Length: 397
Image (cartoon, rainbow, N blue to C red; front, top):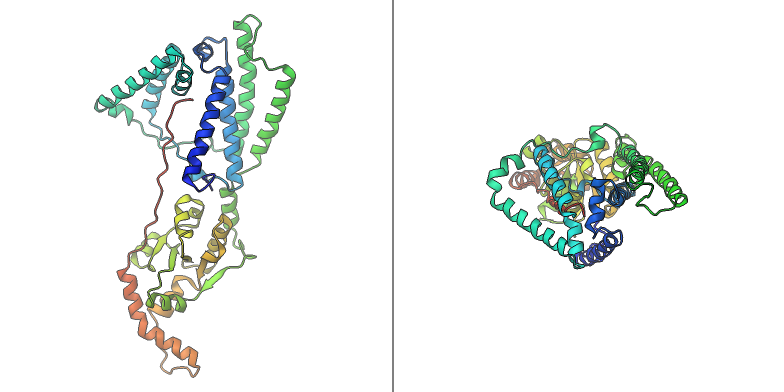
């Protein structure tokens, strides 16, 4: 689930190519001209509105589609936290800067590289503003960090699905395209800044409506998969690899480092006693990027266990549905209660069975059970390595 290609250098080169074409499109759309940019404020040219709103709805539908097909993990997307007052004050300052200077940070860079002197002065002003903010930060820190509201999202706030929200935004976008054209015609005395023929616009609108309907019915893969996971018979048709408590015990005595464990029990139980190299997690977290380092660890098998056999089976099926290699996903047969009963708290019968294999198993449990208990007590549960989401920087461009 992303990046597009696992080789970092390839992604950097791809970003360079995308950035080149993005700059070209900004210039081609006329965003290197300050008159076109401030036209939104004066009502004579809403090209900026059309382009950026179109980019926004394209991104929304694209993200929804990629998430639906499991190609993008929504949990890995960084969302800027909301500090209410700093957003309000910063928005007012940027608005004034936009209308006075005629650029936003992104378009000013684009314009500077094609030789616009006014854009160069705008970039210098941006740099000076950043420098003054850094120097005077102690004076404005209270405002900057005030009224923290977390990372609210509109569809959650409105208590609607992401698909329905996307549908409504796409419809709203095309309604505003019609509305701003009316404003342009009035301000420019019958002349619109949009050269698109009416017939072409009608076709684009029809296509957008189809895309909006498509967005309405393509829920992200994660919620859909988790809804299926909640069903008791989830994954019954899938082959699940099981490993017995005795085999795990033998490997622990031998110092086998190829095993790692995902403990699905409550945190309190996990902290009290857990198998070595264990990670405490919930099945819902299997879809998150932070579990990728666990399930995809080179040369390791991941053994899932809890206090519920059915939960363990469904969790293993979920891990394979997410995309982790089936040969690396295992389930501890009987879960932690079976391991505790058969290995840690094993009490040999008064009379040993005649069956040689069973007798050998009992003797092993009796001799090495206390050692394994000591291994568990001495080992610290493994911590999940959580890659921090990178903050996306930049202005409106």
